[in-house]
Image 1 (cartoon, helix red, strand yellow):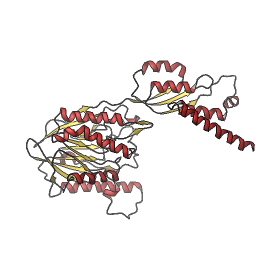
Image 2 (tube, helix red, strand yellow; image 1 turned 90 degrees about the horizontal axis):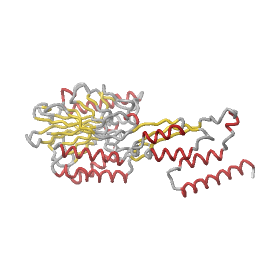
Image 3 (cartoon, one colour; image 1 turned 45 degrees about the horizontal axis):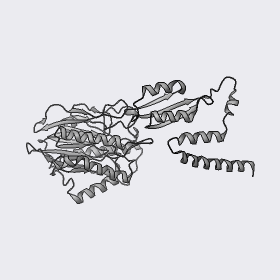
Image 4 (cartoon, helix red, strand yellow; image 1 turned 180 degrees about the vertical axis):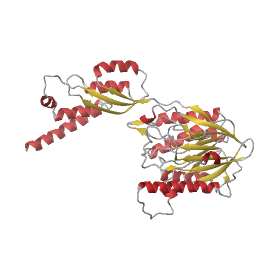
Length: 415
């Protein structure tokens, strides 16, 4: 049984002002190509299919895109198994599961053999089996969503906790107990091959520069010391940095795209493995995914640096860039500089600027501070922020600002 492992798609996500839909859909389409190219039977998505930033209309479009991209895979008997992650909207995913169950059976009872050719989304812990096309032997899949209080503290709704750490520890214990219960369930056959699919932070993983929109205090960390002996493969999601966890068959596939600056050096990919009746056939293989360049630029002398940047970054139209600008009033034209940077890096996702105050040695600090009035500062700020809008829109907002400043001036003068 050829199986492809991926995770952390975050469909519908944003980075600052940039909608990541196109970047992420290209990655998903590449995953579908790999499914066909490698004759994959089962696609595992280990959580975070969607972004918490996705709007309802965006989610509808995302599901429609899924249908189009994976139609052939499903129609030819491919199966998609996925679990919910911490960024998946729990209520939305539960609703989606219920809606899917109206059209076809859900994941079913514990240990049931489920039919191929469809997508199964596990918002609750589940144990399912799929038959290998060649041997007819069933492979067991334990599906474990991200450990949330609603899932793993449901027997203690009124309990008070001395700290967030205590609560997180109890949630982690509940998650581990649920996994252990599946492994001792009468429907689980320890003699047959089993695969774990989980969206979770396991002890010993290398997080990288940062967790994606989650602090160490907020995250729930579980122990995974027995996974290498218990499962033929563990398909993990949540940690965006691709890595093995103590053994080649315990893997974080990583996210399918660079999601923020902390992932700027990550090489993205998906993991292909072949599972036979006696275990893995060879070691898992990483198949590469192209990823969008993401970086930050610091500009301290626009007049000198902009010409060089235009040569160095001539092909940066799709790059994601965080811009830090220092300019000098009286020497540099802020609006012109921002427009040039916008032309050079049209997908800048964040930017900031400040005035160096270096107007010349003849001016004292007090005189420099007086060189720009409040109204001038407001006009400059609005003009810069609306640089991507039409001139008509800019003129309307500037006119409103002028009226507001006039009203404020009348109040201050007592008129």
